[in-house]
Length: 369
Image (cartoon, rainbow, N blue to C red; front, side, top):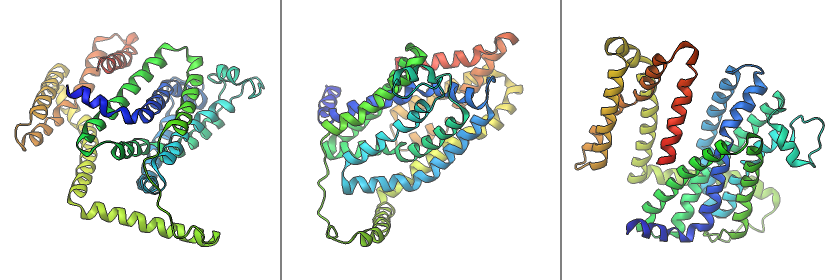
């Protein structure tokens, strides 16, 4: 069977996929708890925190800007110095933000020597200053690791797997990423809250240690001519070499029809999906809702999503995917229409059930998927 052959292709990647899965699980575990920690530190006694929302927005903007430069640079470095060192660096950066929250938590003057006792109480005693420090470290960590871990892992797989089998292997890696996130959600839901940070730190530390001892390097480093140059000459020459290397990589993308086309398609797809979703949710839904009601909008959006799935899945002609993409205009309205119906069906004292309901069915379908 084809899926069995896909599993066999994953054997050379065992020592890559195992620590990667553990890393992704550990990252996902802390997502829900970190919201409570940061909210309680920045806005004590409040259920919502606009300050945390603004900081998250600034953080995402900074990460997005710097990633445009850092991602190609890390790719170049992985080609020159190997996949393993860059994977170790990028995966290790995820440990330090959580380490800051834990090691500097105000816990009744308890020393760091009693580490797990510190972890036990850090959930309740993180001060505002250390949350800001966490955001700074987390921003730096995301600039280095967000997206780059997956890209370098894909490059490692491309080094090991035959060209005809790469698409199947890449799909397995992507599915493993989704499954790891689901498992992280399940562990966060099942573990006592006071142990989540402890388990996450242990798993995050395990991943680079495992890679260090078991992951095999796939890139053979070329001998450089300037290895006997002076220290100052190397310092001056490094920026110039980086610039030349990145310019050469950009030229490869620009002058290759395939790479240039894929870059443009990916850019406009992401830009269009995010832009059209925002416009539709803010402009189209308020206009349609008084005219036809939430139920009609929900039914139309569900039918559009079904048509999109069938057309995109079958795609018997080149023009079919373009036609199916037009249904995005309608099916993005599923979520707000669902929220509106649930909210209208709830009493004024039970409005909190709406987000909990949405979160529960989302988690359930991710587990079943």
